[in-house]
Length: 120
Image (cartoon, rainbow, N blue to C red; front, side, top):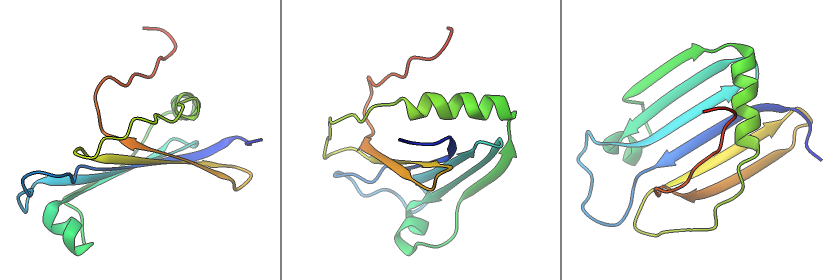
């Protein structure tokens, strides 16, 4: 049984079969949201991705604690999508709980995936 959600981290990678991206094309993004409302975002272009150095964009901000907790609960209810496609990018989602357990969900960056939220 999981405890309260402490944070989530989503890593998306748009490297796929096909033409090689240009050196300045953004191909990887990282998003972390903590239950306290702290938010971190960073991104790498293809050159940075290949060298595992630096970021082309970085931002730290915060949102209201209740908004963060709401988002984290929604994300925690996402079921793993078993549709894997080999010619598109991918994502890895890590959910960290206050009891130091982790849950990981991975999938392909494809359209037609929806998360139903409270309200419209």
